[in-house]
Length: 62
Image (cartoon, rainbow, N blue to C red; front, side, top):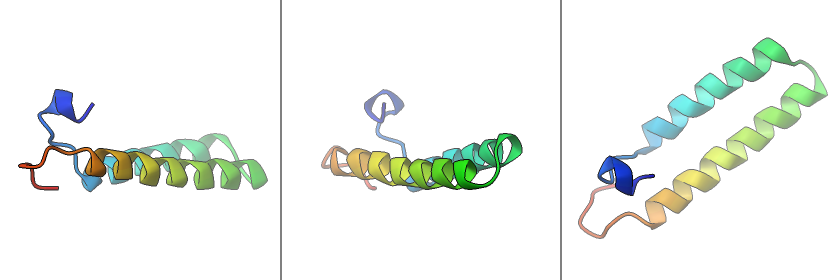
């Protein structure tokens, strides 16, 4: 996906996704299920950002 965006993805994009996702979780779920989904989404955002960062072209700034 980063390649399709001319290697323009940055941590801010993942932070925005996570903020929207957490708002959705808390509007639909509560308790243990909400906490489990929150934890999973944070791990997913970190993992995806790490993958994108490691695979950026050499001449692009992170």
